Amino acid sequence: MGGLRTRMKITFWVYIIGALALSGIPPLAGFWSKDEILLEASHLNPLVYWMLIGAAFFTALYMGRQVLMVFFGEARSDAANHASESPAIMTVPLMILAFFSAFGGLMNLPWLHTFGHWLENTVKIEEAVKEVNIGAEATVTFDWVVASISTALALLAFVLAWWIYDRRYKEMLKLPQAKRTDDPLRSALGPVFRLLEHKYWVDELYWAVILNPYIALSRFLAEQVDWLFWHDWFHDRVIVRGYNGLARLLSVRIDLGVIDAIANWLGEFTKRLANRMRLIQTGYVRGYALSVFIGVVIILGYLILR
Image (cartoon, rainbow, N blue to C red; front, side):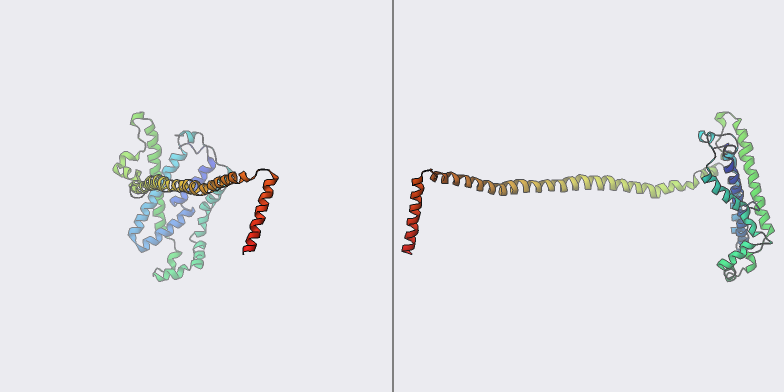
């Protein structure tokens, strides 16, 4: 980015406060939490204490690098060149957080230590500390040596960040384009820089162990199982062909071959019977009278002979 200090002034100042607090610069809030952790580690395990000191140093170093690269110098991208301050819905919460980052830690001053006593009453620190044989005083003491070492290292990290990423970066810009490097530490650290740049290849390992097998399994399920098996074979062959075969059976064999055949036969039989019965419909009265006479004779004969 670069150059955002003049384009996003509110964000710049609240970011400066947050960076200093995260780096553990007194009297900001981050200093007190870091000091408590380092003091506790110095009592419990010296190795852990020095590891945390190193972590605090590198935290201040990368925060100094971040502030210099993002907010100072010239804009190094089109987005940074056209950046503008965020609206109040973003800056007001940032200012509130910056205020407490700057002054919230004052409750933990050595002659007040209000915050420590609040925590004692809330989570009963004294009982927990007694169980590990540290003593309750370890929760409310202030060690000037521990605080001075961590603060001095944080300030040294800021100076080192400025020396590398401000002065060296300006010198690098004076070089021809072909000789410029993207980061001044690349040539100094060599393979270590490459290791850190690739984040210990955790992303590559994550892709190799989790994402690539997951993608391959998803592709297999989508192409082989869902499409070729379920769609092409089961759907198109089993379901579609089975449905078409059943439909042809019901429509051709049963509907047309049986139901329609019976209905057509009844219709044809009725039509033929009607053609035969139509012959006795002559339209002559004498013929109808003869038919009635014959019917009466048959009935009387049946009644006499029964």
